[in-house]
Length: 138
Image (cartoon, rainbow, N blue to C red; front, side, top):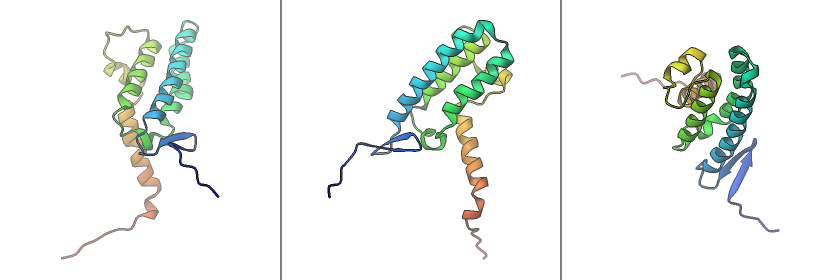
């Protein structure tokens, strides 16, 4: 019986390189997000802002959120943040020179770093029973 060595591992449709740097998965996400941006720019003239926001959450945000605890701390997450800013600008009809800080607030959308922190906090809260309490008394 032979054991094959692979460069990557796939689990829950997330591609993990052997050294656990998620660059390949982030590149995969960026391709999906580019497709979402193209789709959003094509349907923007025909939809209201609320409909575009719903489409954002159902399409773009689900791509970002899936596997976020695994890749959210990587340096290459900035590429995903740029894609998110791009789709926010498409949704609101702003040009690339407009700051997205107020647009995020107006649309009530969390940037990936905030989503990462939120997902880790939710993970800790939902799995609280698996941790033991450590108390030291002096």
